[in-house]
Image 1 (tube, rainbow, N blue to C red):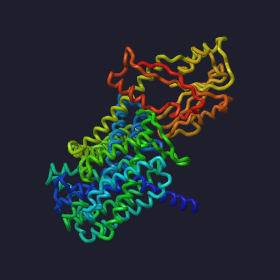
Image 2 (tube, rainbow, N blue to C red):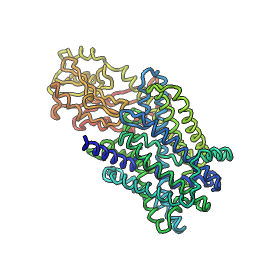
Image 3 (tube, rainbow, N blue to C red):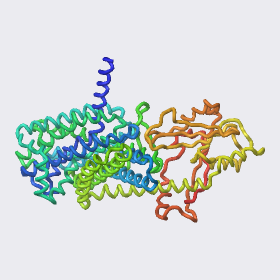
Length: 627
């Protein structure tokens, strides 16, 4: 027992360190640009003592309410079999008993909106982080101004170009590097606080209240800048599956939160002493001899922060695909031993193009900051609504507790979202337009798949009819096993019926296999494969996968051997239907949505590759589906 406890503590410490590297990269680099934006042309506020203390108080209590109270202590309770994120939360809420189909559709829409907003955020985060870090060179001398943009673009291109190697090789370095980064944040801040200790008065919420009452509209606009201090909060919840809630909570409460507060207050103390430093208060915290090393470390930290965002986009793409919210994507696993390290080429290169477009359009960190926040706060607001539903329906929290808590959270999230909507004309429309396009695409794909499934079911042949057909003497029964993939577990495969109709051939062993993609992240090996005998050499099989798993049908059908069904490579073939979706006389979708669904269908990865079928033993039989 005594030996077990140190081992457990050592593992917990390791997970906490790793969480620092992956989870807190985004929020950990926000001091690079948050205070600078608070006193920029965007807010129009001057760094007077009252304004400095007021803004610091707003940042402090935003971190306490939104990150610490909401995410660390409430939202992180909502793990979907160990997984988090807005799509996992949507799946968790949708599974609650007693929910009508109409309300379940509302939750699906909210989940899609959250995912779409997340992708919009994924374009701005790498751009603002890397650009703000490289702009530290301007503090040393204006001579670096012409090369800031090229350096930032080279860093970003290199980062995205390395994604196909996976993060396994450098992932173990992220934690220690970010620990050094947070130590630097803390030391830089404390060094300045010691010289201006009166800045600590901003810990009192009174300063936030007085600031808001004095400036009114100006304070509301300032919330758009305060939001920058919260970027990356969603990662605390999204990465539960990688580290667990306790290591993430410990990393936030022990390391990240104190370091961030110390640095923000250090920047505030600097502004109290020298208001001119508002042009770039973060890098002006450093002594002259440390400026260039700080720029290097900051750039490395922002690369790590960007890596977390990129990896999150890959994971979100996988979840959306397996939940049926987007076309099948070509997903590559970059680690043979660590599940979850994946690479999605299409998402990677589209994201790079978008990030470079943002950099070239806005050109500076402060200009990007003026467009930042709508997507982040929109996702936060959706998360609050879904968790509220789960607290009432799933956790059975008393309404006396839920109502005041979520009035507070919804009020804060609503205020932050509304304030950031003021950025719309300043460039905030960029992530919003991207999110709108993605949402329309996801909703179209969701409805299109439903329409195809409806038509398939109308044309499907019941199992009893199939068994009656098999009894005919005209069928030729060659040796071997044929595995027919079918959408529905109560009907025969269209590819099987075509084979019978045109060839009159039925293998000695026939398996009607349905692949179910569940709204839970993982499926245990014991529940992976279910089989029942139908008679006449036929078996019905169901393979189940979670939305965080990659289907590998070619490997997982090996469990059929236990029932005496040979699945050896020589005598086993797979048959899968390939739907040719066309317009019908009685369409199920509006014309514009039907055309969009047809276009998206052309970009979907091959079902053979997506399901992990052996290409040299798979036969695709086409069928016509009218929607």
